[in-house]
Length: 567
Image (cartoon, rainbow, N blue to C red):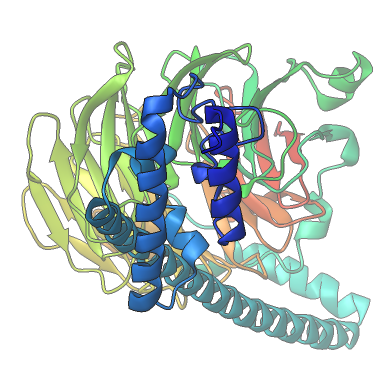
């Protein structure tokens, strides 16, 4: 009998398996010509182990035949579940069981992936539906705008039909009618409310461009502005993901412009350049000392900045856009209201959430401190709640509005709360009773905002009457006697929704800003417009500086205007 070496035997076994269709790399077993290394650990295969390897090869062929009979799946896929070491160390039954288990797990993974794909498709469908609704709303807005433009053209035609002489007579007559008598104690007189119009008088009151500083730098609409309570700093917040702190020098606008460009600090709410809408600055407020500025953003974060634009603190806990935020008078707490239906009191010193209040069933639209520890919140759910630090439930609940409550404001003493709503009404509430004290129902459209005058008890002007102003989408501003709950007068100078009103610090004047691009300054003593300015975009907010000699307005055309006011 002719003898052969182990290498030659290895090669014969390798060729036999290969010619039998056995091409899986895991079973090459090092049977290359002249090589007898184990593919598992790289060691030389001892001659005595050769029979075991051959047996494993035969078991492999048996397993392949069994699996082929049992399943129509691809054999390469079945064997891809196995590792080389498994093939060498386990018998056929064990290998078959391993294949079944791994195929079962793989099917589960496929099912989960399929479910994720379906969920993604449902999400995309919801997003498409949302976009379709937004397109429909945009069409509605465009249709309304066209109707307004047509109405403006008709009104212009009607005005052209009057002669100049008739106009002058009407102006004189109007000025005689709109003066509102005041009693010695400063209260409004007259038994009936008066309608005050600026249609024919505003031209003579136009503020010259030399008395206006136009602040440019924002790249999107400017939706919020506020003067520092202690200095010449003006803050603005925009849809361009920034807030800005402008240093406005004393003196007239003309002298300010002659001194060169104004100093401005840019407060970036997102790193790098981006158009990400989730970082829109929606609201801002100065602390009482004027040393810190708080901003609320669409990303759900509140941020605290120094006057030079340094980010001091980022407060993250809300799960939706922040619509309103306020410092308490002491300056140790910051109150925020969010679309996530909650309000949070933040401890500014520790930079942590002091308490989160989950009272509302809809987005929280506005918040306002009553004192250093208690506050009011309003929501789309039509409810108003009074909360207090340390209390888990509201200490007072006010129910009476029939639509979302846009704004809540406490009077200077903290004893009366005013609210306004999309139900066309404003209401006045007292902590001493559950039902509203007065229901103010003279507006014809939604009321967007309200403001208390800085007069009466608890204010710097205690000898003057306390008045409430309301601004509405019906294009009017109305002044209310809060003691009697009646209308004092209606200011009818705007042609579009009025988004903002602000009393001067001495309570003698009222500024109003509208989507008609105009801002009016009303004399409450004379009952007429004494200054007016028209810009190049709708006005979202107006505010006075602490001296009352300047006021600012933020516009939809990305600008902020500062105007001089000296009578």
